[in-house]
Length: 433
Image 1 (cartoon, rainbow, N blue to C red):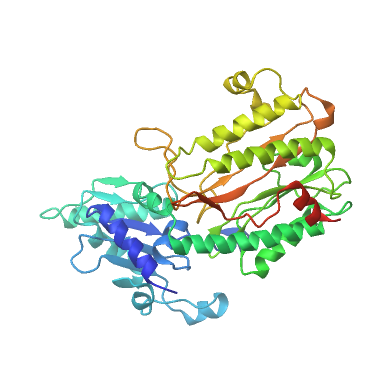
Image 2: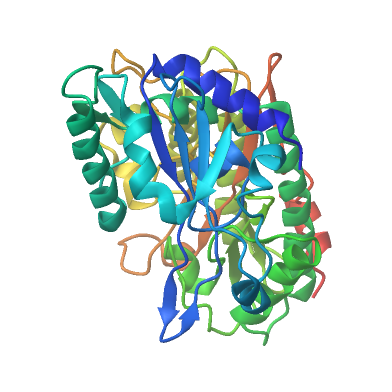
């Protein structure tokens, strides 16, 4: 593991802290049922600053400390525990391996934390995520106040660290972009496998298994529970049952992405179960594809992040008017938001270490912020014609979404997930039931 990316990030964060300390805990092991645990997934903020993938650890950044500015508390080596649950880095190896100034057993956190909180008027820590750890931090602050009664400053305010850290995470570094390209490549192979496995009579879960097998095969895992929705299920935005059969003449909507080295991919494709779009399916699909392409065109440095949503909305509205699902002018339908009967969600979100990644969508003036190189967003318009809508019966039950991950570059953008078929002829060729 290379230390320098994490050391550089910590150094940049220290510059932004203005002398204040920060406490960033790792994720914990979470019980699934009885003595069974969920697979461990590291906290994204903690990993971004350390590259360390063990639970029960705490990163303390203390710019005002005379010697130790970056300190890690972690589990000590324990032969019995390691026999059962795997090896640990250990306290002695942590400073050299992770580039921190000092390391101590997690059991010493309560005793040692107060000394790192002295010297500033604010503490950067996220309250409310872990009540037990919140108590540890509050008790450390109380002890720091006792120690500093005669001299020294102590925090009197607790500030959300995301104000600084999440803005750093929003702009992806070259190594992060490469990780996301790797996740996109694995996602492409998963979607292609899902297309090849599609046939009338198969089940949604069979397609899910085919897709996710490719993720695991390439060293990754699903970045989120895959949505595999056939027929009417494709009109349910967060469909999770994944049990229904695939029927001839229906569409299959798949929203699935690989997480590789903790970086996520998020892609949606929609394809016909029998390998051929009907006339009505094709009409809806072409509108969504055109909307997505118009949206991607707006993902460029210096343009408002609202522009790509507006482009998707306009293209979808005009398309729905063209096929008779809406009537009147595009301006009137947009102003009165009539398109929301068929397109009721936003057109994208940040993506990175989290699927819905961190970073503000508005600037300090509460205006939609502008894209900058290194930002990565999804672009994911859709049309969903629910059975209960009063509209042309021919279109009912059709749900289409097309989603890609788009990197803002200095000269335009890069669609990280462009290897996954989405043009009609390419999709039909890939399915071949």
